[in-house]
Length: 72
Image (cartoon, rainbow, N blue to C red):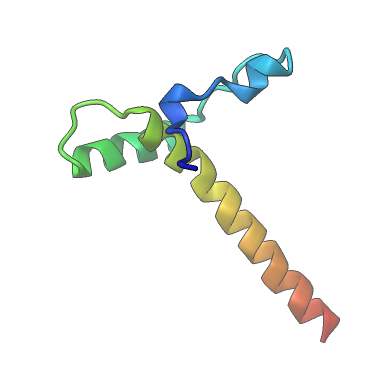
């Protein structure tokens, strides 16, 4: 079964009754850079999602490295 693209999925935060979160200025800038690199004037949903996840992924990876070092 093929996965639905993100623009066809319902917002999970709305389903839980929560407000949407706003991107920080740094994340907005990252999304704009990504769009410009791809030749678009403005960032799209995918650029915004990638910018939002970038810091979270790095933070998780860094915390894993730190915890592995502390276990040694």
